[in-house]
Length: 152
Ligand SMILES: [Zn+2]
Image (cartoon, rainbow, N blue to C red; front, side, top):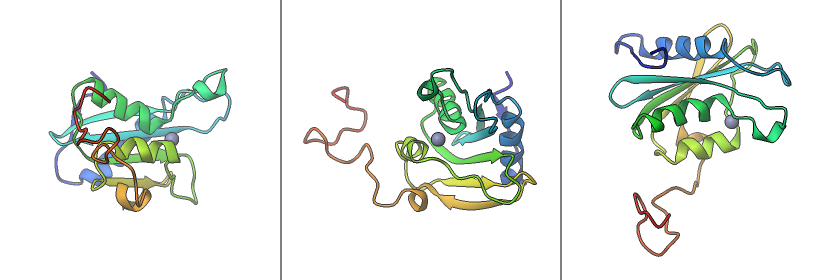
């Protein structure tokens, strides 16, 4: 399957960025014309990719990052090492929206986010750096530690 690719440790960062660029080519963005791709690396080395998927009802659209992470989670992966994000911006590193930052945060704050430019160059940040002082699954909501709690 296209989304199931294991990449070697060597040049992992560049390979992940390249995967996000390939996913960008699948972007469904007839409204914004702004193509975005993402590639998330699960802890077991599996890569899942995603693109933005827009909708005539604009708010129903989905970002590339959440598409990729949802594909991984739906295949049983909830532990991640890194995610790379690509767009067609030449002079700016693509930056995830607030919703995607929170979506990433659900699966930990100490993993890597590669923000890339169209030429493949990238800036590395952690989820923690992108979303400081965040609210996550270990924060109390029901008065007990709620990770994996079906009451959520
Ligand atoms: Zn987003």
